[in-house]
Each structure stands twice: as structure tokens, then as C-alpha cells.
Length: 338
Image 1: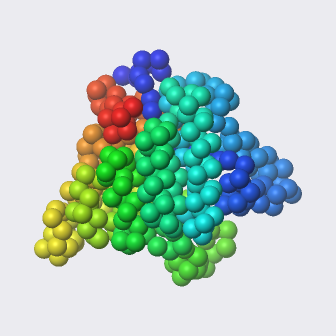
Image 2: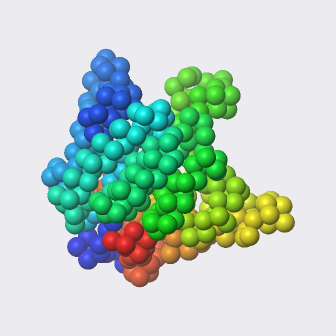
């Protein structure tokens, strides 16, 4: 049975935006791509339109949401975020970005919510910024774009952030970012063009594998034993983890890892999963069967993917009306206290 768009609430959790300062800093690569494509007007126009959509956190975006049947977006700064910046610059830009997003959320409280950008190269300041945004501005957690100059959250240097997130009872969304340049060179560069290597290292494969590795590193470090109620969110129907979950459990038993639980238990009890543009039923069914509907949430990955396609995918999922409602909004309402 297909739901009419007016009959089910939708909360989308991986929805991106930019600010002018971000575009002059970490986001300048997006602008550079548009400038480099000047010889290909169609490509250049597409990138310019992408920047326009990312920059709109007001009425234009809400009109697009209305047209697609999306009730609420939880907004986050687009990759590469502030994670690759030095500490001083990251602290300044994160605070500015978060304040701009807070203004948009205040203006449209029934349509927007926020995930904070965090200067995680300075963990104590990042933890304080998370607390400021949650307690003062009602943000729903934080989004972290992958590694920070090659360092991942399994490094205890970053654990003040995890501790604060658990204390505040808000999740951390782990979002992809390109692997470190050394990894791209050694792993993804091969007997094909640099253009193919670049896509293989990011959208086609590397983004997702690197994020899956990030989750596994967190689990194997004992972070969830230290912070047992901490919740992490990943997108793209689990970043390949659901397919590998039985193999991971067999190959990494608690007798080896010395963890309190199996790897699969952490993947089912400390991790949530969103759709974010992976509108493919077979992949969804694998996730559904491996972790259960209580761990799956809706997202569209706007503006990189279509809100209309995401909504159509949600409506045709082969699940019960109650399970569709859990995915569309109820799980997010419970986790994010919306």
C-alpha cells in the first residue's frame, strides 16, 4: 500500500547547507569545481545550482520540501565541514556556522532542526560547543565529517566529545569525507585515469568504506563500553556494514576483542542508520533484516540527491504501515526528542 504524502510525517536527517564563510574556506573546492567547468556550461550550471540550494536555509528550501512531501530537515554543514582545519580556525568557523543555523531553526522551528558542526581538533572546545548548541539552541546532536587530518574518533584524544554527547543524550552523526591523501594514493590510484581514481576514492566506494571503518574502529577501541548509551548515526543504508555484519561477528568474537559484547550487538544497539540517497530496495532489506526497523531512519541527502526520489522510495518500501511510520518519523522523534 502506498501512503499519500499528506498522511505520514517525514523527518530527514542528512540534509546539508553552507554559509558564505564556509564557501570562502573549506568549501572553496566546490566553487573551484564550478570555475574549472567553465568550458562545459551544463556542468558549471549544475554546480552553481548545487551551491544555490546548499546556501538556501529559508523559504526556497521549504518550498522544495513542501513539493516533495518532506516535513522537517535536520540540517548539517556539508562535507568537508571544519574537520580538516587547524584548531583556532575550526573553533571560529564552527561557532559562526552554528549560530547561522540556530537563527534558521529559530525562524522555522517546525521545519528545521540542527546538528552542530564541531571543531574536533580541539576536543574540549568541541565538547563545550556541542553543549552550547544543545542546551542554548536546542540542537539535536552533532555531525562529524570523517577523520580529522587522518585521525579517527577511536583515538582517546577525541573522547571528551563522546563523553559530552552521552551526557547530553544526543547522537553523533558520522558522515563521509574523502580518505587521507596517502590512502587515496596507495589504495585508490591504479591503472585508470585520475578522474576514475577520484570517484572510486569518494562517492563510488571510498567514502563509504572509510565511514564503515570509522564505526568499527570506535567499536573495537572500547568506546561503547566506556560510553554505553552513546548513539552514533551513519547514512547510506549503513555504509556496507549490514552486509558484512555476520562476517564481522564470526571473525571478531568477544574472546578476541575483549569487549563486553559482540561487534554485532554494538551495531544493533549503539548505531542508527539512515537512507540518505541509497534508494535501493535490496540494500534496504538487508539492513532491515540485520538490525531491525527500530534502527532505521529516513533521510534524502539533499541537495546531492532528490527529495522526490527519497519520498517515493519511502512510500514503496515493502514494510507495514507501522514500520513505515517508524522509519519516516517515529525513530527520529524518539532519538532526537523532536
